[in-house]
Length: 306
Image 1 (cartoon, helix red, strand yellow):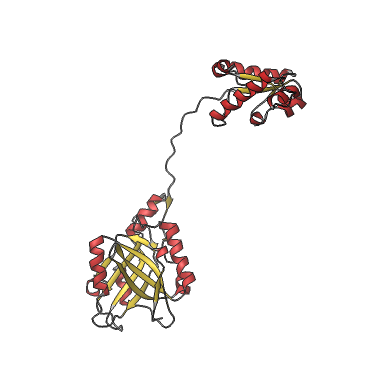
Image 2 (tube, rainbow, N blue to C red):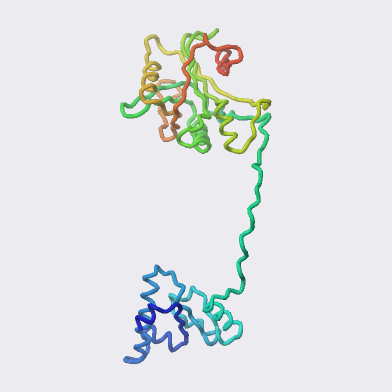
């Protein structure tokens, strides 16, 4: 029996009330032992195949006898051979003659890439409403001997600050591979401002174009792009060396983390939100003396008043 079950391509189980009773061992003692043994072997074969069954086929002689199909086979196709249709379906399966033949795969059509013109495309990672609500008030630097440095963007209001970086993480991921976010730190004199430096955050034109092309946009020289950016002016106390230390650490590690932070209303303490940090390899260190009229960083020379 074991050898026959093992070698057979298909095994047909005629499921009746008595058959199920014997498979389940519910007959009187000493009766139906052969069927019970056969049932155990079938169960074991199905178990060994990881419940994948293509060989054991349940048959019924009447439609209502489907109640007597053993549990492990209740999920597979059964055949009622009392009808011509049921018999034919079984015959087709056993002889490999499907009712519907799958047609041959057609020839692949060559389709041109779908491109969308990006003219007048407004492209900026700056969500103006969120930035207005978050209120960027300071920039901080954090250091760990085992990690790249952190450039913190400190906001007064935590909830919109989190949303800003959550949006960026959704768009760019934990690493800004295309360098869509442009960060520059510009030292030097700015008319009407105390001595210090400006931190300028916005979209990088090259990174934006690269991302647009990845998304299927056609970008031409005649296209016009509008960018929105934000600036924070820092006035460190004389002798402060945090910026120089950040430059040194950035050079050593070849990258840094851009992260949000929350500053207290009295401006005396800041709390970085490291869980929302984005790793970047590009930052620009510049001086106001090298910025021309049409330079993207020329905005720092005419800072808006809060």
